[in-house]
Image 1 (cartoon, one colour):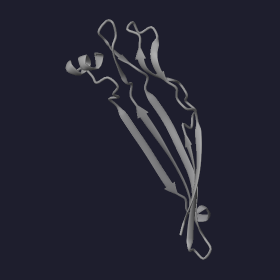
Image 2 (cartoon, helix red, strand yellow; image 1 turned 60 degrees about the vertical axis):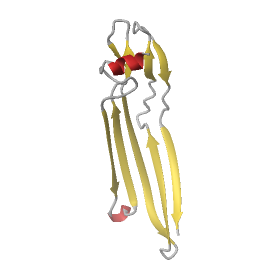
Image 3 (cartoon, helix red, strand yellow; image 1 turned 30 degrees about the vertical axis):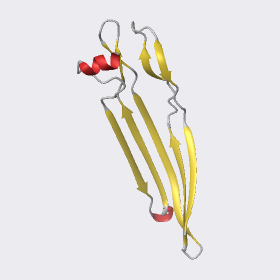
Image 4 (cartoon, helix red, strand yellow; image 1 turned 120 degrees about the vertical axis):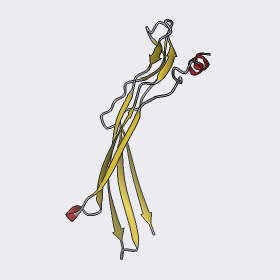
Length: 130
């Protein structure tokens, strides 16, 4: 089993990404836009360790970079008794749909296991609190 072999040799753990970074921020608007908010985030996941090739060298899959955004509004209804919010989330803003490679042939000539990535996606949500 290649996972046991790599773990036992303390080289790397198959399926792990050694480097990850997530950044997200949200800003509440003021003035005549009071109640509105905007935000965004960026995440990086380094190359995934796939195993050893026929030459005994580590194989790595591709890294992942994704950007997300949100915009919304929060307000009050009828005598300020009810509050509501509406929010639009956009995932994968730049529509990066390159497949992720998880396994390659022993000679590195072709991918044997990939995962298809969803393109840009939108989600609209609303809530009322009383």
